[in-house]
Image (cartoon, rainbow, N blue to C red; front, side, top):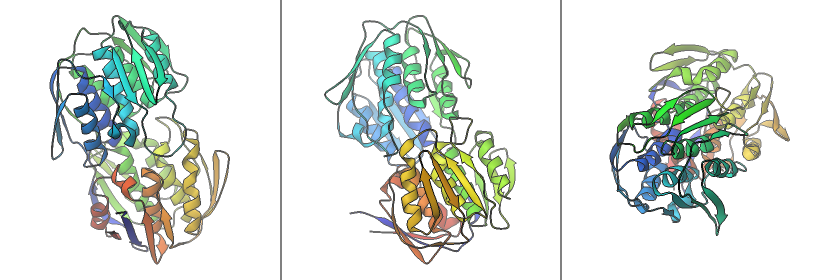
Length: 417
């Protein structure tokens, strides 16, 4: 049965909220467990729907997976299966990250084309071209990515765009390739760094971690390890933007504030008081936020995952904002739902111009993806009356304890069937 949120706006958020492990990291770390025979343990895992989905993907490949609270134990056999063609793969995008590890361990992989959020084209061209340069043959056959390799040989690979997914798959294939691999124009996201740290703990030789050039010396084999997932910067930033929009005062813990330097600087420009702390930050807004322009870019730029929240903030800011989307072209579908809530917004190509209004108006709205859903809830918090947010299963895929965390900050929100 479809569930929805009922949100009554007008309450400033206040209090403290703790952030769990990063969605955009944990699923890749789980896939990395395929690289070593034995049991790897991942802690600080977020309580989101995608974690058990990834567990199902790994079980289908012959792994034993035990979920216990925020800990996942993955036991990988000596010979994993290489065919990931089942329902769980099609439900979320991150499932494609098993491609690199399977090619590395099994020298072949068949992975069903992944599903996930409807935010625009996310082709696998760079994943495949990187694997080809390492010596694999890779094609799309019958709705699956099919890759085969007699052996993997290190190579110099330059990505046309710093794709997170392509960087991860090529990196995980290269750690078991023979010789040296260099990935130029690699993604630099904190989640990539987190993956690198786990691979190093497993015995991989990596240098250039956190830079745009990764150098990998291939190892003969890796060993299982225990690793703690970094805090989720996107969830943390969502609460920060919510504090600014509702003219609230929120302390966020469990995340490295350096991972959100640009985001927090942008919020300070709206008039927010930002206090950075060792394990988080505090955001305090005393008056209606000032309008600010946003432009999404790969890390360390403004994250595309926060674009819907930026539009929500612009919708009630004092002045006119321009939001430029440089990563996923279909993310502006969210603007149509914001207009239902009374936002004065229009889009032109990859730009959105939003003229702030003092208050939004309640209406039924529909989530199209994880971040759009969260953005609509934030907008509902500053709308008059009661807003119905539908298709909230998207939000559950990326935000653990979403309702409980908001209620703990004073929001009037509840889940109904």
